[in-house]
Image (cartoon, rainbow, N blue to C red; front, top):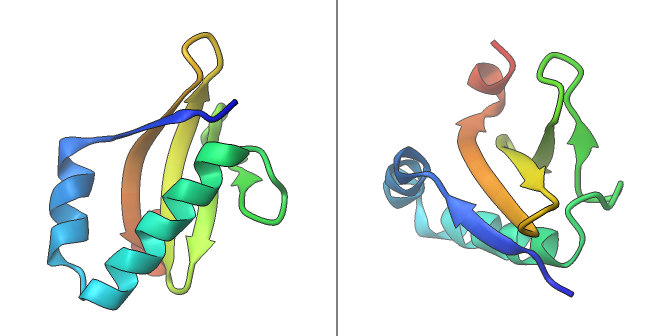
Length: 86
């Protein structure tokens, strides 16, 4: 059973500002995460932010948390690699 992906309003603005190819790749990754948000080939847990995970798309990082009760993935940030871990 798939998870529902919810994207924060600020993340939507970030995605709109990206070039179309990068935005498409990120949206494709969100679709993959909906199938299995814990897949090790797609993501890893963040040590500095317990309960959150990160998925790499080129030089960009998708930061999210999974809410199991509602089977929802909350996308909290999409940032460049330099800014994601600061």
